Image 1 (cartoon, rainbow, N blue to C red):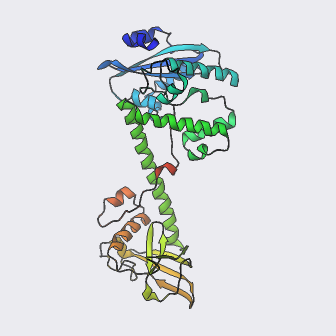
Image 2 (cartoon, rainbow, N blue to C red):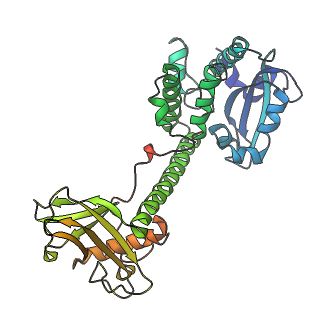
Image 3 (spheres, one colour):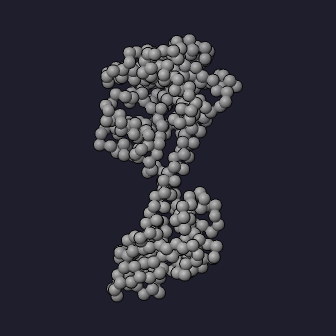
Length: 372
């Protein structure tokens, strides 16, 4: 009934339900109404709480702060040049001084979020009676459930803030031994993923943009880890294990995602599981013992060599690995790119490169998620 009445006279009705919070020093809950000049009948709502309403709204209105703290709310706000907005006070209360009063403020925010249906459709289905029409479901700007805010204790709250900030992997909170942390993490994850199915294209665009940023960040993190790992092979060599392939006909050693074949012509008596030391050698000009023998002078692979040392049944050995394969030229070109500090995106722009299985799954990386 509230929504049926509000939608008929959108902005005027919403503005009339409470006073302006910009000059209030008190604590309370506010409603942010956003709409475009070109389409005034289309609007978005966001419900928030503040210890000091005027201070909170001042930070909201700071474009620099919005850019530094991306969220779904801010994404919609800054999505168009003709976006207009206004704030309305929905509830006022004493400043929270303990978990009990903080919980009271949280309950006020939840209540208003349900009245104006600004939570995700997942939360509306959970908390609204079945008899209430979900007229606003899927066009929300609130993602996190307000009940979680600020009253769970210092240690749990610090952990939650840490998870939101991305300093540690969010995955560990989903697997926490503390049921409160696990529940919060599941709620935050499910609420955020619910944006993916929103009927509002602007909300779906926010999800896609953030997902792309995650992938880019994860790939950069993975590239850096590869670089550091391969550098150790280049500086001192790394102990590795011989692996048999192709039914035991070929022995090879691995360096990250790159494989080096141990030619039978070397006469080594190594079996599956033998421990050896692999070292890479990179020179400014063609290396006399380069691994990819068919590398052309312009191929970075011509400057890369790989030596293997250890012990077999005949005693100690130190040999140079070699391959006549043409595909290995492209693979070694890509390996040299990593060793010389080129990113995956840059390497892909070069000719005669190989990037098979180059990307790491992004859901295991540390990332910054903003749930608000």
